[in-house]
Image 1 (cartoon, one colour):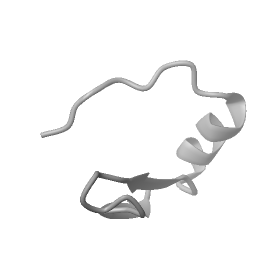
Image 2 (image 1 turned 30 degrees about the horizontal axis):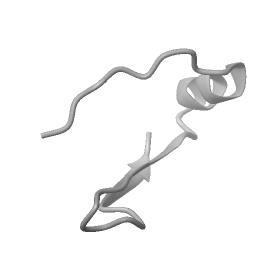
Image 3 (image 1 turned 45 degrees about the horizontal axis):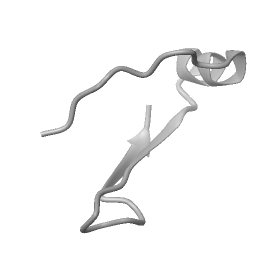
Length: 40
Protein backbone atom coordinates (compact mmCIF):
# COMPACT_ATOMS: atom_id res chain seq x y z
CA UNK A 1 0.00 0.00 0.00
CA UNK A 2 1.32 3.41 -0.94
CA UNK A 3 0.35 6.69 0.57
CA UNK A 4 1.66 10.20 0.79
CA UNK A 5 1.14 13.84 0.07
CA UNK A 6 2.61 15.82 -2.78
CA UNK A 7 3.40 19.41 -1.82
CA UNK A 8 4.78 22.48 -3.56
CA UNK A 9 3.39 21.74 -7.03
CA UNK A 10 4.58 24.24 -9.60
CA UNK A 11 2.17 26.38 -11.61
CA UNK A 12 2.63 24.34 -14.81
CA UNK A 13 1.69 21.08 -13.09
CA UNK A 14 -1.30 22.69 -11.38
CA UNK A 15 -2.47 23.97 -14.77
CA UNK A 16 -2.15 20.50 -16.30
CA UNK A 17 -4.10 18.98 -13.40
CA UNK A 18 -6.86 21.58 -13.83
CA UNK A 19 -7.02 20.91 -17.59
CA UNK A 20 -6.97 17.13 -17.23
CA UNK A 21 -3.71 16.83 -19.16
CA UNK A 22 -1.41 15.64 -16.35
CA UNK A 23 0.15 12.17 -16.62
CA UNK A 24 1.01 9.99 -13.62
CA UNK A 25 3.43 7.08 -13.52
CA UNK A 26 3.92 4.96 -10.41
CA UNK A 27 7.17 3.00 -10.26
CA UNK A 28 8.05 0.20 -7.86
CA UNK A 29 11.16 -1.88 -7.22
CA UNK A 30 9.56 -4.75 -9.14
CA UNK A 31 8.56 -2.46 -12.03
CA UNK A 32 11.02 0.47 -12.11
CA UNK A 33 9.78 1.68 -15.50
CA UNK A 34 6.22 1.99 -14.26
CA UNK A 35 3.68 -0.34 -12.70
CA UNK A 36 0.72 1.96 -13.20
CA UNK A 37 0.32 5.03 -15.31
CA UNK A 38 -2.47 7.12 -16.67
CA UNK A 39 -3.82 10.51 -17.49
CA UNK A 40 -5.18 12.55 -14.58
